Amino acid sequence: MSMQDNSHINLFWRNSLAGKFVTLTVVVVFILMGVNAYINYRVQEDAIINNLKTQNTMLGNFVASIAPEVMLSYDFDALNDYMKEISAGEDVVYAAVFSTDNTALTSYLQRRDPLVAGLITQHREVDVRLITETLHSSPGIIHQRFPILFENKLLGHFVIGTSTRRVEELTRRKLLGALFTVSYTHLTLPTKRIV
Image 1 (tube, one colour):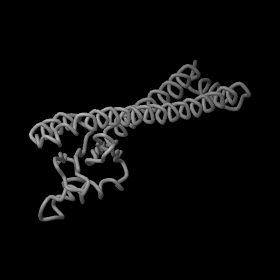
Image 2 (cartoon, helix red, strand yellow):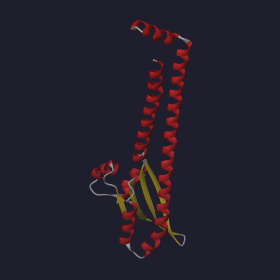
Image 3 (tube, helix red, strand yellow):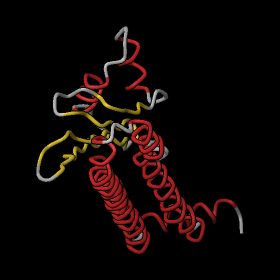
């Protein structure tokens, strides 16, 4: 078959109803797969963020249940150990226990986090209350607060802040990978079969 005959078949295929139908089908499938990948991305991201909130709630309830005994016995070393354990989570940006007058009894700040590092360099001394209040309004930080009660009397509160940056980056990578796979599969392979 000569080159001219081959180009005639390609021109005929592109102008035929079957060629247009296959092209339209490939484009529609590609769009639907892209929408499906985006919906899955949002669902996965929401599920992981809800998981982070659930972990924070469990940690907060745990600290709120053990902190009264530690606070009443002035065992702040134990409270520091609890904050150290809580801060072991890679998404934890800050964790602190405050008294009723908002004095930090113990705290942990993730100094490697860009937001925390920026706030620490802005101030001459580290003011945990100011930093946690500033981070509370930052997008990408899940802030939760738990009251510490003893016999229905408020002793203070526990605050924890978790970053969603890592979660968003992981789900974004998955979305881009899925879109690349879909586009390669649905655009390249059917085109090779047709031509």
